[in-house]
Length: 350
View 1 (cartoon, rainbow, N blue to C red):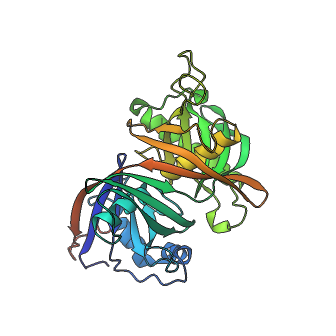
View 2 (cartoon, rainbow, N blue to C red):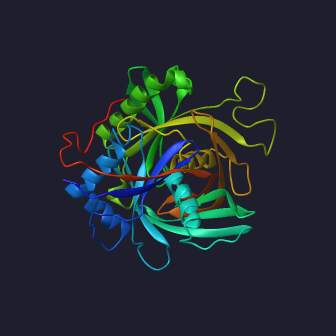
View 3 (cartoon, one colour):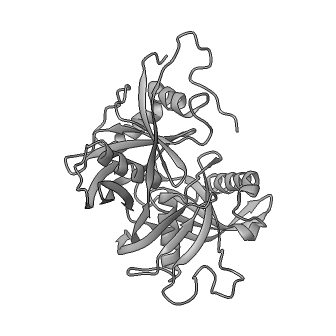
């Protein structure tokens, strides 16, 4: 039973919450952040702390956060274990953006009043960088440079209650299934929230049941993390779908990412944006030097995604993606547990 006080600092990135626990009261030994995540998955104390901070009455069904841990080596400023209502994820772009802002806000990483500074973070899927932009002593934006991202499979036929979906499997730090929302009779808007969650869960479960989401080098990263339901808002306007008004114009897409077991990302999803960049690069619609992806969330917030390099992962062509957004501090909290409280570690209602 957790009895101590737990301190957190909360941010939101494009509307998606990120709760930071800088001093972890649970021992999680390991030689790397990936090892510590594996330990957290089987640690009753770590799981209870995650549930305490994520579940009601201290959190909610769509809460997200991270436990700070030591980095893998001196090449990074910090390590982090990302968590949500159902467990510990392998990557989190919006969380990396928030951590970049937090590291500068707290003075962990010295930053100029005007200019940029890199905050290097070890996450379970590898080493990533948050490049923090500053002007007049304030943070004005953060670039999230992710691990190589690539397409694993195209045009998978996935049965759903709304018909057969055509899905693409892509790795962007976690494995995502991308599906055109309109092909299932849906639009990415708050009014369709419940239907989007339902079909997102169906797609994830169907692909995982078939064992198709296999990471090529690390089995710990296998399995569908989330379903990206996207649409092309320029379709029907006279412009080429999703490409603005001409050559070089940004590709514009709107999406909702349904991850874990029906959790909804309020932001355009950082690692999901990287996954979409890999698909669009494979289609020849984005590339190094442009165009960029203007990725809008279900609540109207925007990330800008760009391909800044190319590489290969085994036999697979991959892109080096960068996602730009902004995070804002929303509060500082000291959570306590009354030993007589029978609802610890909490509950989840949607």
